[in-house]
Image (cartoon, rainbow, N blue to C red; front, side):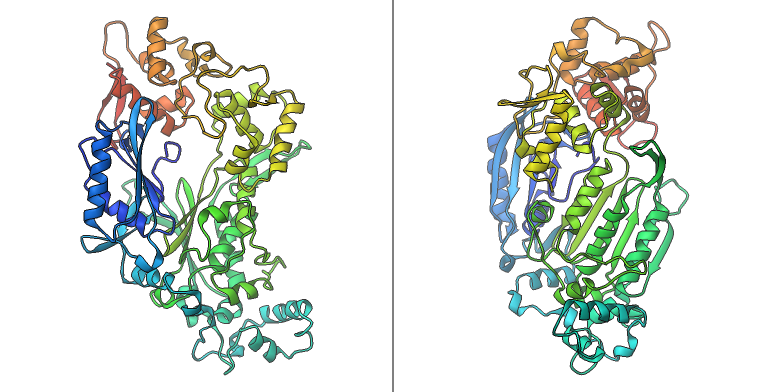
Length: 599
């Protein structure tokens, strides 16, 4: 959350410093209506960059949350509550179990809620209807991709797509090899027995599907930051045509509206690389187009696939939720092949874009391919959100490695070319974390144990790490008391042992400011508050005009740049220092001119 700058669809934090948060029942209600439930963390402050503030009376809080849920949410979901200790504070974890489809929706004061991105919102009538449909048995559900579209016929199909599609069908089926064009279209559900096109047939092969069903279009736009200009979006475009054309044109639009970078290949030649791997983008768009909901609650209300590019994120949102699998299963190493629209899915396996590339591979591996592609490009892992009525993919822009991370990597492994996984391993091992093959498979999924072992073996051969019975560790580094367990990630603010404080790259951020002011004892005290405390305070000290004069406030971006940290990590360190009374905020949360200075 600190790295992302916000909480998540399935995890919500609340400070709860003054007792039960007023909106807690809404959040519990929303999680109960989600396919996977969700988790609330009480005692974590989003306002203070997700600082752990703790709960003063954990037992009283647990009893209050239990009572509140039973009395205010109908039907009340099952919740598990338990305390955990973090940074010397007690945090209450509230795990909310999703209600059975037949029990949904849960309501609070007569209103039902769902999660969207990081917040709770009231369900509308279409959301209610989609939740009701989810409660139906498969045999009771309407196959909306088979519904006929009145006033259509085989004449409305694209004259270039249809021949290629028929060739592929005949090549893949001995029974249909000698069938007529009309018989094939009827047998594979492109047309109905009466000759009208099905929704799937029109969407996949129609020349202009949006003439009959406007919601089959896709809208894309670049969202601009609020800078007072009044402009909200740019390069907004509506895409139409059959599914293959949508896929191709949206991919081109994304590539045109995102950046590129010049990188060196292993052979020494420089190439221009798109910001997002084209294959990953293609797979995620195809997934959104093929598996979107085709029911009247979306097609009848104008709900279409949406693509947005913000300064931080590429967002692809598709109407309708997952069917028959969870997000966790979608991201796992296990083979998953669940189609929301079975007939459309089978048609898409035989569709190609103008360049001859297939729309989908038909093996259910598109999402796993996108995960692997973004990982290998050193990007943040795509995030998938399913709230039952909408499926959203978020791809954060920019490398997962900061400039200071890359500097540390170059020192830990000078002149050695490393994979993404190997870079992460070296950095986290240098931070005192422990790793195992099991943890690697879980965090870098899809990754088999054999693939994980290959990554480790490569680092062992380079004599960068050692693999022992105690786990994986840096070569020559002895485990310390602050090392975390083998399957638990260390907090970004885990204090370093005194003997590690000067390890390579740890405090290079002092740079031109030299060593931090104050005695060694003062520095240890700051480091006990947050491991980046001495570096942050050194920047603030450098802004003092002279002895005996007041310090000038310094903005968070300036501090982050000079210390060599991300803004989110810097905000967290500042919050810890403010809470300890070491520094103060000048201004207010969210104000442009807000700065920080020594007390």
